Length: 202
Image (cartoon, rainbow, N blue to C red; front, side, top):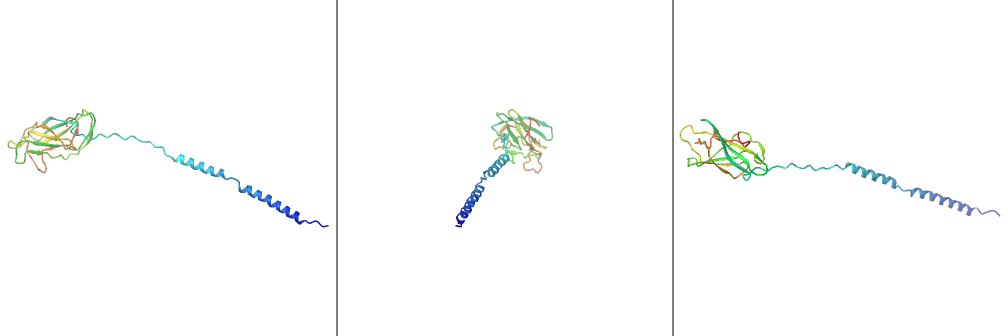
């Protein structure tokens, strides 16, 4: 009797298909975690290296501007002869902390009744002002340049109100000079005040 080969052939084909399927499945299921892990590690390293080092620098301590609460005003020497004279107002830091002086203060001469009034507010010089620190017990000064009268008795102040730069309050001192030639409103007056400068004298 001839052998029936169809069942045997079908069995061989089925076995071949099963074997091929196992090989394909093994290739597809191969993990790719190694590549992903390497990429993440490189990214983390780059991020770590890019982080800048931060340092916080301490800002310098700035002293406040000098106020009348920190300063004591006094009259210095008067120099000059028949022409322009110079009277010094001395500012002493009597507080326990440094402060800053800069710019011009104010000087108002006060005296007897006069057609121009009892107060003579002195204009500022054209000199440039400077900024400086005034430590405790250190001194600064304002120079008053003034003209004595050319003819006649003139006008003699009795007191003067002196104001530190950037202040609204004044100290009162006795006027140490003689009569003054008033030039209220003059374009180029011979009486004026200079900026505050370091030291007790000019």
